[in-house]
Length: 218
Ligand code: TMP
Image (cartoon, rainbow, N blue to C red):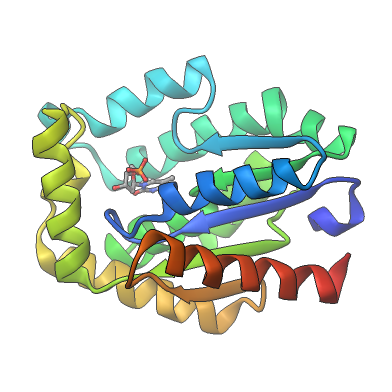
């Protein structure tokens, strides 16, 4: 079952760390709100109170020995909580729900990045999300070097403790980036958008992808 068979619309944003997807999602949320209607924003992991606690376990730098399977399950645990607490009720109310990362992140990072079975991820998605899939996924594409540079600057600026994923080696991010490209070829719902240029320029590309989606589906 996809979101188009429910009342609301579910749109997700994906991309490498430092791709600018969070900024773009906020921009789109503002534009959609101005156009009217309820817009709900999610950020995974960490949308719910329980999800925030799971996020701090996942991104704690002292947990560098976390098993990849444990990591995958924790991302899904956070997501399952978001589905029950926020996503499902919002879609049933007819809201437009935007999520900063969803299961494609697990496919790209834990699947392609860490080498876990994509079939496990699909199976866990069925369990955790119970048939709710994004109608449209905006993949904000950026070079691996540029993404790492931006993510590192951000972490230094924020003196954030949240650095576990950002400290992975470059080869890992290359696999993740390649994984996202493969996913964009596999799933028609994924619209790849060039993430280079100003926030406004990228924002226009995102808006065009959303308009195109609406023309076809709504
Ligand atoms: P964020 O900085 O976009 O909030 O994401 C936090 C980190 O979590 C980022 O490095 C990507 C990673 N991540 C995964 O590895 N798997 C997932 O399923 C999700 C949602 C995020």
